[in-house]
Length: 96
Image 1 (cartoon, one colour):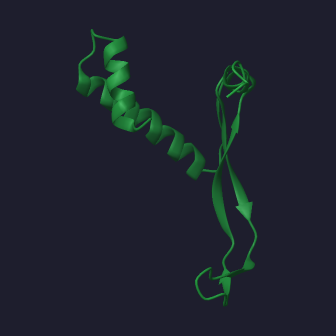
Image 2 (tube, one colour; image 1 turned 45 degrees about the horizontal axis):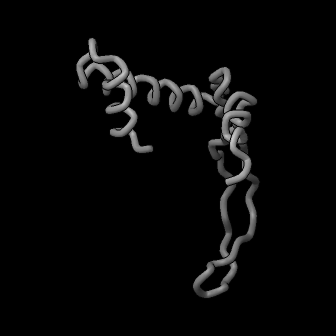
């Protein structure tokens, strides 16, 4: 689902709100999650999952095209762990 599909779905579910209001709300939510992660905080959405930041150490990688060694600097990356509610909902139809 894309951001525009999400705003469209929410607009359908909340017809008393304008599309611009829904889009602004989605933008604010994403912005707040991004800001919290940038500060090193964890964001938990009960029943959905938790976003956090993990540190990746400096390492030596390989260029997939040429095979030459490449130094990859240490960095922070976003990490998402699905909550129990989301995992249970995904596994209702385990015969996919």
